[in-house]
Length: 295
Image (cartoon, rainbow, N blue to C red; front, side, top):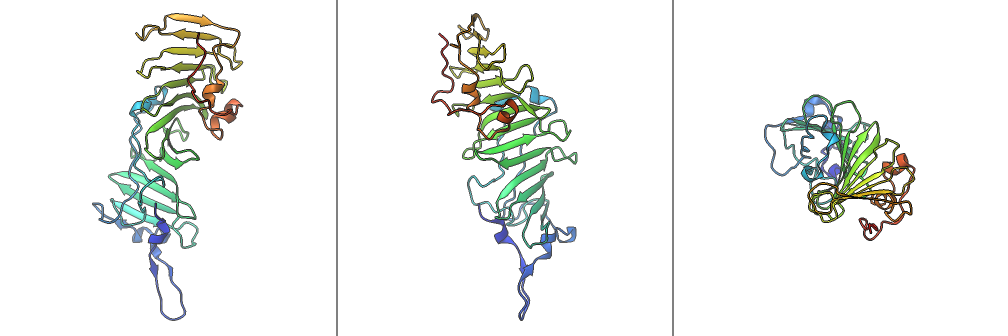
């Protein structure tokens, strides 16, 4: 992605005076650009998908999450300050240093605020996708990809967070968040577009205790592992032996042969908020994260 600061306009004076920033950078509404159609040669950050009505966070669907087309530096040469594609476009120099810090846009009715770092990289994109005046959707790069955070009920806190592959934009993980804690996570460990590991914190203590596994990648849960006493080791397993969607067989264990929740926690990056809330830090990610001795 090219540096948005390279597109800044300057006014040059004669004599010993040097170039000074354009008044456009101050964000004066009188200097903002209004258009009814995109201007050729420029491209602005586009709107993320509508997160849907409040309450959908209780049943996240990783397979239907729409990827955002906002360029966060993963690929391409999009310059967020080139041209004024959309109905409204206004770069802002918040601290008066002559550099663009924010870009306010309205494209197809979607209000967007793009935050730009000192080096010209985009650090956060906020959007009001439902037009109610609150910026309920935030898109930001992370150490391992891109995070799309959604406040589904407009209470000011994130309810649903979807982690996207920076190269493909495909969802690889989705978290349900309640009272600031991750309570439900779905992971696509095979990058086939379908979640195959579903982790649940059923007792609200901050750590996952249940794992639902789709071992044959057909969309049906084959095995359910439960840590019933909170020691991190699975002691109950139910299985769907005929793939009819019903768990028919049961197995209990006290010797640890069903495995532990740690092998699935290791799929979540060490710097992720989950490990802080659970008081855990993953070991090296296993070669086969779904492999568990279920004999």
